[in-house]
Amino acid sequence: MNDQKPNHAVSLRDFLSTSTKFAASAAALGTLPVERFAHGASPGDTIKVALVGAGGRGTGAADQAMQAGADVKLVAVADVHQDRMDRSLASLKKHKDQLAVKEENRFLGFEAYKQAIAQADVVILATPPGFRPMMFEEAVRQGKHVFMEKPVAVDGPGVRKVLAAAEEAKKKNLKVAVGLQRHHQPNYQESMKRLHGGEIGDIVSMRCYWNTAPVGPKKTRKEVAEMLGRAPTEMEYQLRNWYMFAWLSGDHIVEQHIHNLDVINWVKQSFPVSCSGIGGRAYLSEPDHGEIFDHHTVEYVYADGSRMYSQCRQIPKCKGEVYEAVQGTKGSWIAERNVFAIRNLKQEVTWRYQAKEGEANDGHRLEHIPFFDAIRHNKPHNEAERGAKSTLTAIMGRMATYGGQPVTWEEALNSKLDLLPERLAWDAAPKPKPGPDGRYPYAIPGRTVAL
Image: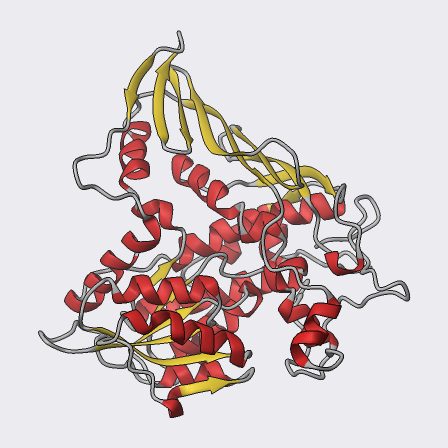
């Protein structure tokens, strides 16, 4: 959070102009040649994959990537934690014919991602999202296809970097997938066909929720010290507790609720122009609870005046709600758990999604199939821009709840607030610092300048 409000002199139209957008960044990205498979793979070719970020989601993505074809082989891994890398590789041993990570291709440290990227044709980026923009930029610079987990950034500067790299990826004919897996699930795909076809009429309002108990890695300082056998540096502690710091996770409105927000953007086939909201900390209060909020409520406005009402909450013993709902002039649609249904104005169900025999809706697995098919057969596949804009949707919501002020799309996109530390090293100081009581300062709506 800044003490001074930044200057937002660049208009949204100027910033999104494809003729001038991000020219300097794109020039810097174009310094290396396009690697093999940019124009399709030959039959029998092995597609070499590098995993950057070997935590639970990265390991899962590597597992699902290898399920996309016997020609997909994991050849390199990078992480900052040796124990996570070891657990990941042990978990992936079930792919005995596809797991081909030699000892010399197991890279450790903050710069390890560059070495892992160099070994592969395809890169899986699954570190905490604060690192995503610089790693995506490097992968594109090296001419590699990319699967990157959501969200793709945690602040405006990061989104701008991803958008610049996305443009360069298009020029290099690189394929890019983003882990917003609902786009690849038949239940959502069939729903969108009906909504975009006018089945519920003109859409007038939308709601989306991700209200659950707390999630994410939460390590006490004592637990990290026991793991290391010594007191951790501040960087070591925050990385082991990454979900609780905005520079690493973006807060749970960005890290998790992005899925619901992205669905509504898909419904609208556009992105919001402004938002306002409230949020705070009703449950999080301990020294190891970092700086994030435990609840956010945001109202987003689209260019046509329609509104999305958004809630996300991570507080124990409260009602759980995870769904999206849309109201139209002829009826409504809801996607909750395994129920995808359309109702008319009398609340009668007129359509309910029924899976075909043998049909799967595991989006985490399904999202890899068109990605690797595009690599093999040189088909267009670049989800980076959409992923960046849905990420920005979530970021502007956090800005609104942290600051207690309305935020426009262009303010969020042009924000100068860079959450990343000036230096990445174990002895470097992240920007959030604990007070004398061990607790971290957090945003106070009405006082905090969150842009």
